[in-house]
Length: 493
Image (cartoon, rainbow, N blue to C red):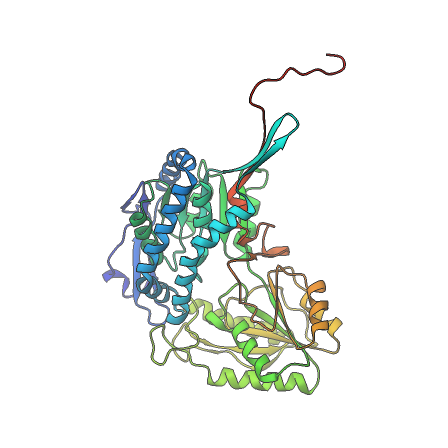
């Protein structure tokens, strides 16, 4: 616990039936990782309080599900306007909690606002309703909400990513219990304010604050119909195992990736270096779509790309979210994660990896990490895991076929990319790369809300989010209709 925590004002830890109230569980704090200042403090919701939140969502569900869809859309559109009016406060809350530069948090808030219209369009295209005539009347397709959705938010995009579950879930007619990350909870309070201003009925959205125990209580609560999760493969796999044998609970799990970026001649080495830096190090490497493995050809071209990349790392500006001039990246989420980078780097060296540039830890502050690169060509195979930090491995290969094989040598399958001016290589990459997102001459982190977001392997459970969130927020109902009962005949009757 920080020395600041005793003086931080304690916030309510439970939003239940349209009102905040004190949590009765352990005290927790969220600190600005750049300064160590406490920016949020609360008592966590206890397991009985979590059960109350689920019960409130269950009680509110029938009326919300039966509400005319146009009325639900109107409330969500009003929510979007309320978010926009709080854009500055939201961006600052995100940056204070998790440390990302203010320009990045501002873009995150814009994505939250834009999610409303995109979700309405996605629902109509992916689900919606239709009917047509048939031989004995009509056939119709409709979609219905599942019920109570448990949404578990991550720290790296504490507004945009849970918002990307909550908005489609509410639009479809579900009610929600939201547990924000205890590392970045402040934005949830502002989201609730926006929903209240928009006129969301009490109980349709409930919020439970807290750490791991609160999340476990939500997952174990009686009456949840779905779990919408964004986070690590370790936690996502544990959730998947927890609900084994319970097909009545729908799971949508996005679990990150150990993502490859292939850089191949012909390409401009300077432009390639820009794409490497944006792919691997933006948000201090704390995006699940960051490139963790850089694959380059042997020879002069690969050397030029690395030289240009090193120059960018050396001049990269690190700093607090509100520093002037604006930094490219801030700290990682906390000092313990920064220390983990050093441990990870040492383990790779023990396997035979050779540092191209060592990660510099703690120079600007305990949670800051200046990006590092390590060449693993010819080294023993490292554990296939996602390190949430500005650190990447390099592999040099002789042929493009070897590059594809190296890119696919992972249990994950979220994002991937190719930097090359050769359309034939891009065509081969689109056919061969095993990933849900494939990028050509763009950063691997450039996800679009108007496209699905997810991938095979440990990156998820086959229910991609973003534009495809509509798929897991409602189930299809096939109807066959006739205005009057018809007499039927059949052989033997």
